[in-house]
Image (cartoon, rainbow, N blue to C red; front, side, top):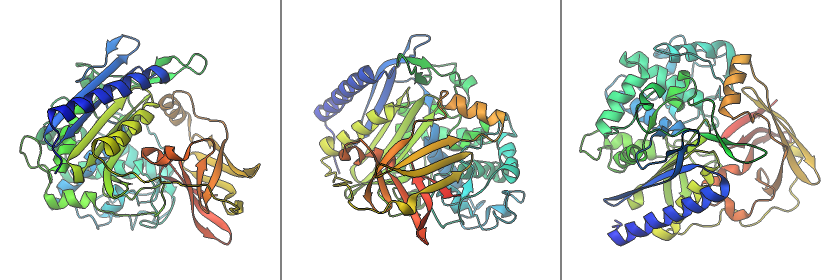
Length: 477
């Protein structure tokens, strides 16, 4: 097992401080906070400003929205209920939620609890944003699926990052425990893990130091505070509302390092459940889509697996990485979306320089003479259309947001900082079915940003059925 002495700890702290200062300055990121736990030692580094409107500094104990890192907390809650006998992973969800339905009759009959938390459920609801508050928020979300959302694929057939699956899992937890999701999260994760500075609402977070997200003005590139702090409460279990600190995320990560025992010695999850979350549940066998466990995404860095989840919030991005082989946890938050690049840089430095892990080059060369025809066409998912054509020997993708109603358009537009459309993006072939965004150096894809690669799957009669970008599927229209 690695041991991190004080000298190594000082080196890590100095490196992160230097990297954060340089990146934030050159990329207009107001503030950044990061923490490392390694083999019994821990350090947290904060840089810059938490909110440019108030000038409040980013402190080591400043809170932030967890975003989709929450999905690992939600999965932990599900596994707790499995251990207590209230849920079974391979039982259809409709046994617990008889009203669970999608637009196609019978589409939910074969979706199991396991499908919800392994992103293999096929629920096409990635941009479904019903706006509701209070005790019935998750019920409102689940009820709305029946009239608004269909399926992308048969349960277990494919893998597609699923906000909808996690939110249904949150509603499932409410039904079997009788508690609201926020109350359950506080009772069964925050308290036993020792996440004493974490909360489940803006009303709680405003009572302490809390960062807000920012978007860069397209003309001046200056960072402007977000006009929306959190997503609707309907998105709580997927990452809409939980808020906490780097130290709290490190404690949660350490709990998963220690077979389910928190840093204070409280058992949160059994060793068997902790191990199950870290085992491959589905593998698309494509470099841009890492294998998935339960809750965790399993990033291969050569022979070393990094359990990871990143989390977008309005104008911010968080990350939590656990490296069981090296007894290491890394957590961070930056208050513009571009901070994901800094998080990737720090993660790769930790792996290669601090731990000595050999990180192989993921993409060594571009493909030659790849037939582009099977990938041309229109692909759709919930409120999203992607038109793929061939331009000058490259694939060109045009992404169009097609809002279902004015309320959802307002929410998504605020979440995206007004940027619901983007210029066309060109892609160059790596090999049949795998493409890289044009203009990027190949080494850019070695770490977390392999998600920028795009893949196409299930070619039948000369046409791909699915496109995968950022871990999310769209289906040929």
